[in-house]
Structure formats: structure tokens, C-alpha cells
Length: 440
Image (cartoon, rainbow, N blue to C red; front, side):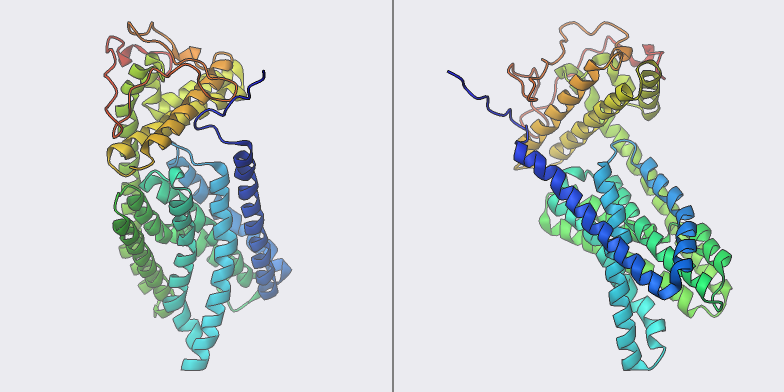
């Protein structure tokens, strides 16, 4: 008699896997279509030459801005499809909605308060509310539908920054295109300097306020506090954006504008940098605190603890494996490192009470993802063996290999996670991290 095997717990069904590919692709297609529509509207305003030159110039500031946020995201890199979706959301849907609403609002204000009122009031009163609202909807969507991909303030800053970078990219095409087609504007070089060199992080700074609120919200157990945190972040983003636009519209001289830039925006930007540094160090402490328990449970090798606890050692580990075994092996190590970090963050959220009803299910999913990533890395030549420098502590044994479907027929030798029914036992400390010399 043939008995069909049941899927292992945490293993997605084939239909779920298909949906996991189809929905993101469909979403990206829709967002890309919005980008094309927006570019078409811009082309009607500034002409083909303006769009072409504006696009070439707009690429210059967007590359370092996006690269900066990807650098911030090194501990636990977010899924590339979500980051790409965030950029397209900002460059396509957000810009398209803002362009239509802002134009309509400007027309209404002209009719209500006299010709020219829209050009003065719409950038200050309407644009900040609309633009930050549409950009912030992406973060709200992540909180509602993809909360498991959202671990805290750093993730909020990264997603918000990428969305805002996409928005600024399309907006820069419009402003730079106008500088090409309209001789009465400040000129291409002056516009590029102002938007691409002096203030490339303006939009990301505003929207990161919403990202910070979303990061605080995801760490809270109270629904009311989550909503309040996001709304406060949105309000701060509106105020900053409105102040920035008001400085451009109402400044009687360039000196007034640069005073606001130097004494308001620049300190806020520095403060954001300090917050990012603090948040990244907090992430490092979370991972470092969880790793000994992972080793004691057999989820990772004890000799991997010091390598996983430091970003430079992680990078050195990947570089060594790539030199010896190629990019595929290095990619497997990177996926394994990311899976370890995700499980550490999940256990920390459970420990703080931010995850309750689904704690055991989410913990089990992250654990099995780690073990699958580890199995793939072990299958690569010299991917993990380069970290096994010393004998393990007495009594340590690796986890059982997974079945082809990703499940485990033998029970995992694993303690319950924090917030489940106890914390991992402390590992044997006879293996001192200081003795790992190869991968520093």
C-alpha cells in the first residue's frame, strides 16, 4: 500500500509557493505600469529631451542613497523583491497619486483664493500630507500583511528610505526636466546641485519618521500604541516636509533657506544617523546574546558563534568561501547567516511579548528555515567547514539532516524558545572565541 507523505510543519504547500511567486510578480508589474504612466505624464510636461536628460541626472543621486540604506540593512538583509517593490512603490504609485492630487489641489486653490495661490499653498499644505501618506501606506501594508519581514526600527528606516528614494528619483526627473525645457528655471546644474548634492536625503529623512514609528509599532504588544506610533511618525514627516517646502516657497532670500537647511534639516539628519548607529548596535547585541543558546541547542556549531557575532567576521567568512568554492557556496553561507539573524530577532520579539498567539508557529518556521539553510550550506564544498576550527564541547551534536521536503523525522534536540516555555541552556564555554584566528 502506498501512503502519501504529509508535508512537514512549516513547509508551504505547492499552491502557497505558487502564490508566493505570482503575487509579488503581479504587484511589481502593476507598480512598473504606474512608473510608465508617471513618466508619460512628466514627458507631456517637459518633453522627451527633458525626460531623457532628467533621468540621466536623477540616477546620480539615487544610487548612493539606495546604497546607503542597503548598507544599513546588513545584519538581516530584507527580501530583494520587497526592496524592489518599495522602490517601485515610491517611483510609480506614490508619485502618480501625488502628481494627480497635487495638481488638482493647486487648481482648486487657484479658483478659491486667486490665480497663483495653488503654486504657493499646495506645496506647503497639500503636498506633505498627500506624499507622506502615500509613501507611508507601503509601511502600513508591511505591518498588516508582511509583519514577519518587519523586525524593528532599522527595517522601518530601510523600507521608508527605499520608498522615498524611488519617489525622489521620479520627482527629480520632473524638476530636472523642467530645468532643461524652461529657460526661466534655475538651470540643470543648479537644480542638480540642490536636489542631488545638497539634499539627496530630504525625502528619505521625512519618510523615515514614518519608518521609525512603524519600527516602534512592530515591537509593541498593544494595538492602540501601534496605531499611535505610526500616526505620530506620519505627523512628524508632514511637519518636516511642510517646513522644507515652505522654506523654498516663502524664503525671501537664499540665505533664509540655507539657515533652515543648516539649523533644522542638517541636525535632524545627523540625529537620524545617530539613531541608525544605535539601532544597529542593538541588533548586534540581540544576535550576540542568542548565539550561545543556538550552539547549546545544536542549531549552529559552537565554533561559528564568534564568526556570526560580528559583521566583519561574517564578511570575511563569505569572502574566504567565495575564494575557495565560488559564489554559490558564498551565497549559501550568506543565506545561512541571514537565517540565524532572523531567528535571533524572532526570539527577542517573543521574549519582549511583541509576538504572542503565533509565537510557537513563527519560531518553528524560523528554526526550520535556519536548518534548511544550514543543510544547503553543508552541501556546498567548504562552506561551513572553514568555521569548524576546534572540537565542539562535550555532549554537543549537530541537528539531524532534513528530509527532502524540508521536514524532520527525528525530533530536534532543541529547547523551547523564550516566551514559549523556557530559555536555552547555556553552552559549554570551554571554546573561547578569542582562539578563532582564521576569520577575523
